[in-house]
Image 1 (cartoon, rainbow, N blue to C red):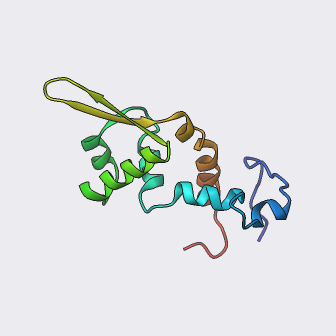
Image 2 (image 1 turned 90 degrees about the horizontal axis):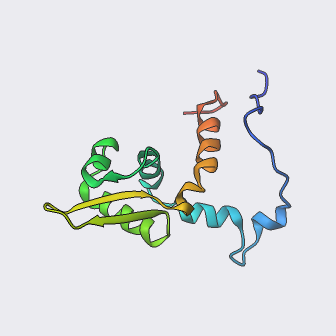
Length: 124
């Protein structure tokens, strides 16, 4: 079997010491912590098209209930990934959108999507 094409993925040489450190500076550990949570990536994907109301988010994420969506949004807001905007109207309206920090993850998520969509040995 031939190796998977890498033309859409930029390979970066990172010294092993940088991603094996145990002092909190490990980029992989920090990225993993930021993206941790069962629903975090699904919420990011759902917010790619712009500001979205809670009910629209819930409908667009298959299998998520109100409580875990609320918890995920609060956690993402605390980590600076999501902006919650309250509109004092009648009835009140709340919209969620990706923050600048959240949008900075799009290249990471695109790379994950490329990797996940290729036919990899041992997949599933």
